[in-house]
Image 1: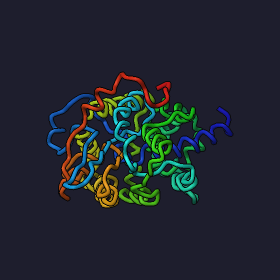
Image 2: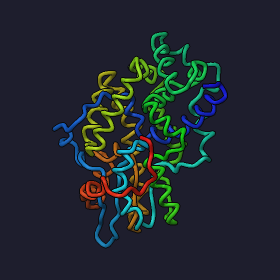
Image 3: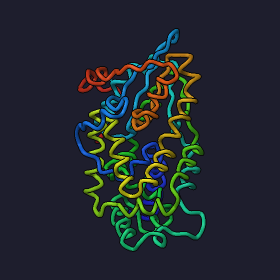
Length: 333
């Protein structure tokens, strides 16, 4: 891949992968277990990604927990939720995906001073970064300017995802926004890019570097971990996804895990619930946020229950739509 092409691909990939992964940033290389696990039952609302939200006197709304990937199975699962989106008055998302944020994102992901990633991490860790980066079409000099958290973002999704993005194949969240725009449904952001970037303050640079030290040494491991995470999502087992995240970070540092998850998940849950109140009180809204925000005592669903809303699962709608005529454009994933 030529340097010019690699730079163009890298900028587009980092822009798109940022939108894809920041709501999942706390899932840096989580060692998840494919399949159901009893621990998910310990978390309120730990099973299911499609929920009806009601309150006396209000028109019901729907909350859909997403995995913002262009992988075909993820997109197929999302088609079961389109029935509700198509008849909604508004679509609420964590961040609106458009080109206006490209420069902000890119500027945030790279060092603007003289620091370089290869000088901050150990030689062994940067060697892994070089080897993995090559699989995405990156040169070592391109990886050197990335901040530690940004390098982690790049490798949180496999090259197959990067390839689909480079071909213009839309992610699940992008497809939902496309449908809303086509139907004239208002799209409302629950967060700004600045607010999401601020969440990264939950980990200092040394902690981010510690996370990079856990990088796998080969691309097959990246693909495998993605497939395991994907499997849990397809099982709608958000509780296990969350539990595995906590387990992974506790192995690094219990204090770090608590602060990092609070910054990237819990604090944002409270903020998103506060910002969605206006639309929920109007009724007939469709909320699409990352599935990791749904479960737990301080998850979005529990917070809504504490404010007098009633939550009911709508999982069966997703099931009956799988295998039927596709709504979204076909992908190669």
